[in-house]
Length: 425
Image (cartoon, rainbow, N blue to C red; front, side, top):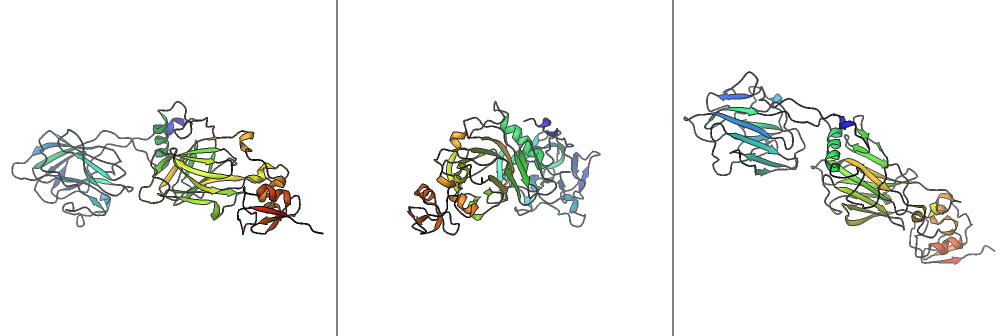
């Protein structure tokens, strides 16, 4: 499963100060050094949005003995390009709001000349600052950050000149590259790319197809990325008893509450009966987790994450596929990325042996699903099902359904408890 060197992750230019700044600020020729003349209108921004876990470093070059107080450092989701000389704030707001995140210093940090101040944040909304070049401390926790975000600085107080020090940083320019990078991150420590922490057996390669997405979506090497509001992927493998499917979460939008929707397509068609929304009632899902889908011998499909908290999804009727004399039904699993999960990878699947795929004795005549598909049981109608009293199978089929299946009538579906033989003469 080669990734073609995962498309050579691109490199961006080093951080600089944005050309939009307070009128009391003078920038150096390359916009990396800021000098303050007076103590008002001293707002600065980075020239581009900063990345999650990217470290922004400010090197203190000059202090002023004429002023007291601290510089203020924070983040904003407002693009500095939108500001004019008239609309540019004179300083950052005192309190956090929807567009500004300004951590308040703990105590009075000691700021010295020729020392570095550092800042970084996580996509989950944690903001860290290091004022004395020793270690980061968490200063603020906000809602998950999913927008572009710029670092902002008030060159206030005793610091009169500061330099933005930044080495080149790797940028993942789009969700596809980000998903590929995380795929490499999560698999580098494994001996085989399709090995799984969920399933200890042998997982074989499989394929996924993607639909309901815009032209910018991409699927390659079994990595699917959502860029429209709702995209879906289908596993190109007909479901059978004792089958395992393992998917891995590569990217998420933390602002949404639900995770994704899983449904089974019967002969390409969907139904509410075979659709389940995965939310917090199932489990907490996060980046790198593996979703395990198992088809039990009786046709029940179960869901679990990292092999914990196994929960049922829905039941499919595999009886018809036990009998070669009746029409075969195709079942395919579909993952609809309409929630937090925005990228999935098919780790692999376990294809059951013929014996495993027929672990239940076949129902005579094809069973209830054959009746629904063919409108009539292949052996005629001679079995009155109890307790619902529907006549839709032969007596032999009815006997095989007792305590194993529900009534084949799609408007009934009551569990079959008995069958009476019916004579037409």
